[in-house]
Image 1 (tube, helix red, strand yellow):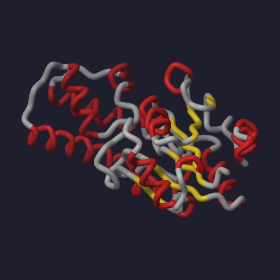
Image 2: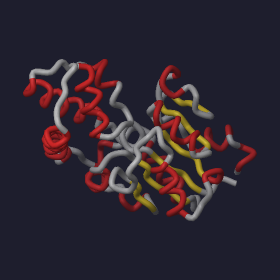
Image 3: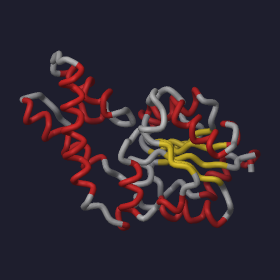
Image 4: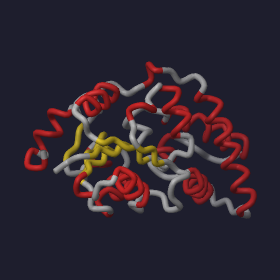
Length: 219
């Protein structure tokens, strides 16, 4: 039986993608590196340190680990400053409604995000109260596609993976859910999350009714 829901943050609850893009673009411009939206798409769902290494590989740049950490921190500072502009109006359409519905029906709910700024984002959205457990980039050492963040969340909820549904918008996120033996809901285009158990183009389509209809034998 499904008793828990685990949500990615960026692209599922809210869309900070544009803020991340702007921060990486600023860093890349300062460094004289090439960076565009196609490259930015490859960063979806992966950690900050993995992201900067993808950008460096693309630009054929080699730096020592200390410098890489400094640059990743600089990018994060730019991004965190931009979070101050977020408000309770910045939920993706349908996300707040789903979280409210899950709360009213008594399901356990966790966050499973690679972001180390998840708490800040949730506070800006006034969303902390929707979650029993917050798993973020500080919770585990291995980022997606390793299933560790989802396993952390389900363990803290006191539920086995097969009793949980993961909501993800990234290919690596769905890979992580599958690796951990979770049920999965993909948010986004087929070419990115078509390997999820069920896929919706947007969170607005991913209502509890639709999810229950698909996983009807599990409710």
